[in-house]
Length: 76
Ligand SMILES: [Zn+2]
Image 1: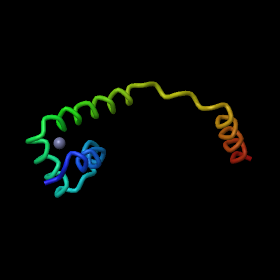
Image 2: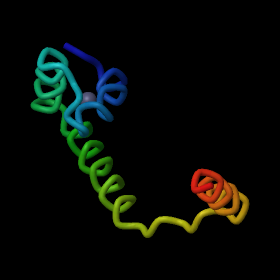
Image 3: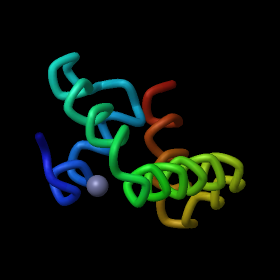
């Protein structure tokens, strides 16, 4: 049985589906008896979804200039 602390470490991979089946079993077993970790997971997923909906920040001017130089250089 894993602890709440260990579950928090596995949560990122659990949410993205990258967790091994063995670890996923541990996480699901823990979630089955620990409401506070279920709430934590819900909050975590909500955060990810909100982050996804945020517009991407524009490129910093320096980077945009470097990219353009790179693209122009490739053309010649
Ligand atoms: Zn827990």
